[in-house]
Length: 376
Image (cartoon, rainbow, N blue to C red):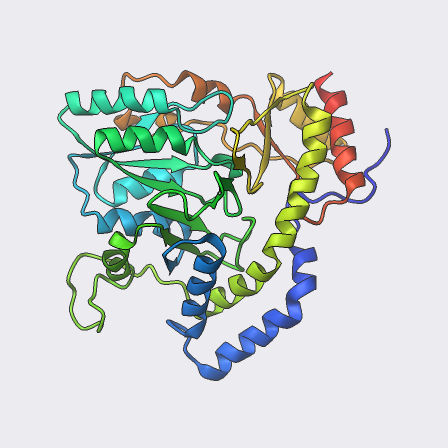
């Protein structure tokens, strides 16, 4: 069995850091010199750069991707009788944010082709929620693994039903839909700067991006303990959702590399697409969409055996996610008696392959060689 051309990392942060370490150190020195560790000039700089890149009208840097979800939800003054619709197959932070914001999560099944929220099932769940006495308020469309959800259909359902759409773009910074960047698709978008993300910091972080700035002022208040602009009086319930100056400085520098790194992610994905299409089920996306390739995820019926074989061959992989949210103890009370067949099926089939801009073509082809052998 041939060995990998060189050791393969699932995500490689060291190679990226080597490119920008001197700039990061200079940024850290600047923060140490001015001493504004909270609310320093780097915060406004990052928010402006995020707007410039995505086309969003406003941006708020937040302490984490989960906070970026909670902030606009709290700004909407959600109540327990308000229904928030979200995919059954995603990371648990999405559901936790809904509950922490005071609303009731309503899970929606996903589609086999793109692994994202199913607009047809969404309409059905809205009807069920109303029948149970809940008031439908919000749809959280998760761009799973970097691929935009079906916003054309989701926005149409939301408009017809009187709901707001919040995009969970924690994995999809750099994705595009009909010419718009993630962050400028839905009225409000949450993203994450967790280090492993395509655009990540050196700690927890995130941002809220506003296409429609109507929620911006209330969200800004929520982020800073619910206080008014002068930080003198609490005008609503809020919490400490700020992102510190050091993390903002890191993300600003990494944003300068982002387009080039995204281009390289696309090149790696093209190798995977071309070589694996007839051997596994790819995550598909519609015309006019482009993935941010936060992850590259396929599906196969022999997932566990294939993963074990790849590990033995020096190919790191990961499973996101092995259990749909309604099957978890924290969330199962919100889904009693409901079925999510596609989410259950995908939980046993998905496998994420190495994806980062510092993979070589030889490494990507080695991954394909070993995966094709593993699936038989």
